[in-house]
Image 1 (cartoon, helix red, strand yellow):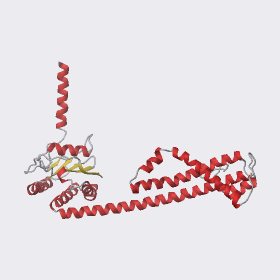
Image 2 (image 1 turned 180 degrees about the vertical axis):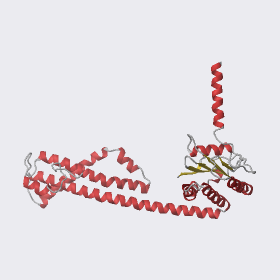
Image 3 (image 1 turned 30 degrees about the vertical axis):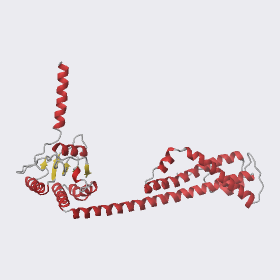
Image 4 (image 1 turned 90 degrees about the vertical axis):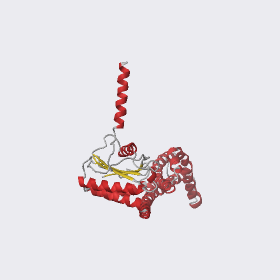
Length: 348
């Protein structure tokens, strides 16, 4: 019986602590971090009272010292929903949450205002208006200017649409810059990889030709083929991987890159045409272009042929190496609004 009583008391304690985790808001401005003067609290609170009276929208500002073990997204959403910011049925609430020690801020948006104050809009207000002021410890100015923007956008939809267009243009510009950078990145890798591939592949062809001529023994030639193949495959991967990644980014088609990385056995099948084509080219150069006879040897090596053909390539297995809260007369009362986590966060 005693154990059950203790267990129930613990559950009750946890429930009460969970309920008391977030502030019970009584004003539109709750400055628990003490970053505002009393006059700033009164002035800001009164403006937010007028906003609710004129539009029924509720915009609440809360500052805290630190978040504890919560993320700012979790804390803001819990604080928002527990206090019912916004009107029930309209869900037209906004919350600006500021955490001093964590150096984080968030604009939490109620369901009803998400089509207007989108994540992109909230993010840009934080990034361009709040963070620059916060870095200079001008906390009130940053929050006050953000409040001004939010009120203006809620009262002037044309200004809001213009703001959204600016965001779209900025995102397009950033995307274009990213594509140009990615294109240059791919081009550099493709050129370097292509040069390495074709140079190494040319040596592989010459190894086959040397074996057919009898200038290179079959066994030494096999070792040279293995060494040259490593350089060739490296160049091919160096050239193809950035191209495949870029294709996936541009087209948003992940199938190609997934196939490439998830089925490496495909590379083994590519070895057949890889060596087959080199062998055919070597045979054509020997019989059709050079009109020379086959003279295959297992061990024979012609040193003069070897020096003349491979000494400067550095790509075969015999090479030497490579380079290495203030008071207010106007109080806040939540109307039962809710938020699903829409909004944006930022840090400085």
